[in-house]
Image (tube, rainbow, N blue to C red; front, side, top):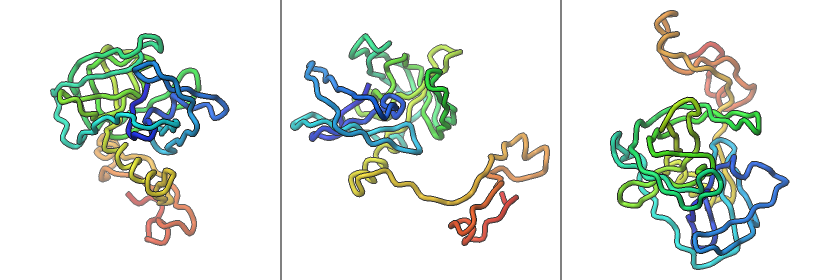
Length: 223
């Protein structure tokens, strides 16, 4: 699934939906028009991709503000459930915000850590990935991304403000740029912090030579 963010043919979806670099893809709009995908831009840090088709006069979605999301508010998911049932709408609530998950595909054998995702009880099925999660005003607040296989009505979506930042960066540079710090780290959880009398935070394991982190004075074993 995906949704139109530009009248000139820019579409947002999940990176794992268009993960095969050698594959060819086609977009079918809600009015059954078919377009060949001419370019795919994949975000290296988030499970996001921008798909480009040759089209004009498309109607973009209205993007909301995911920073204003409240737990308990209505959430509406739209997508192609099971990859077959197009334009399926499910309704639930926002179950949580600021979640951190590890998402992966059993078919690809890879996993990706995603921070600050939104949890929703709106049913998200295979095929819904990349589709919009909307509020009761019809504004897109997130991108449906993952589902907990062992639970029921536990889905996760990337906040739309993350998409806005990525789009702004893409429109300005034509690519996805990410800042480089130059450290390898592991998070000190509350349990580890209490057991070892440490503050919570990122425990630096390695500092890359001549990196911004090294120039800034960060060192191994810093938190």
